[in-house]
Image 1 (cartoon, one colour):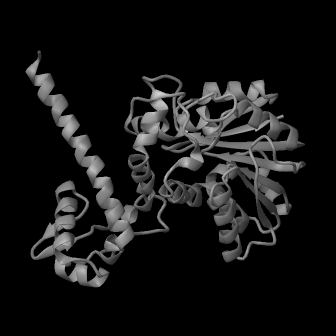
Image 2: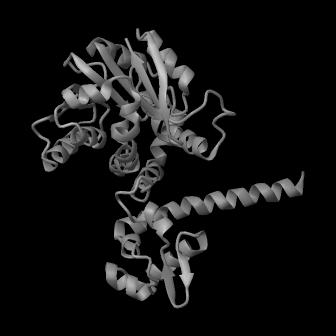
Length: 348
């Protein structure tokens, strides 16, 4: 036994344990408005923050101390301060790095732990719709800042000729749309185009429909409940899969159905979690996050469906290219990327 290595590993474990607990602190801060109440960057006492947010002052002080110990807030003379850099991530809903409410995904996973254990002991299946309700809102909140920051500014412009079509008036499908965040971002940017959101989870479709109505987009945006292999509309100029193809039981079937639903000159936009093609490539902070999430969410969901290919969130570009080649696409390339996403283009 190498005691130095043991102590080093235990330090890592304790650090990870603290990080897991801090995500609970982040979610508390987001849901109670504590971070937003500190977003002006001015020092504030625990008592004043508690009064401002209608919370118990002793719990707020303990929460602030946890944040200060983790470097999320600063302890200053007589109070606490949220620096502007942290406010970008924890308090500013319009920020491309806003991550606070998205921690509901992790909260759902902990509440669903018994179901995940059953999947491990059984056939591996844990369907999407069986998750705690926090999962569905959390996924939207986790991914929406990235869509708002990148979708119309870099991702769509990286595709061959797609933006011109959208400006003139195109027909677009958003498959696996969830609560419709990506659909609505595109619809707002391209008022001449029509958008169809498709998801197999009816409660999410109902939320998406309401969101589009609230945004005044009801005339150009519709949502329907269907799987990636059963929607019936055709002649799409663009079909999008945002962070969902790897969750599907039959991604080859989904890609093949898209190939048949596209116009001859149509395009598939595939956005997937950033991944290399080997475990070594993905042994990074982002990779370990995605592997863990895939263990509890993506892979069990795929195993709950027909085929159950179980690509996993870290499938990588080579494996995804194979999926689209098998589905009948002749062209497949990486259009662009972010630290968190692969942005891929498929053409007939």
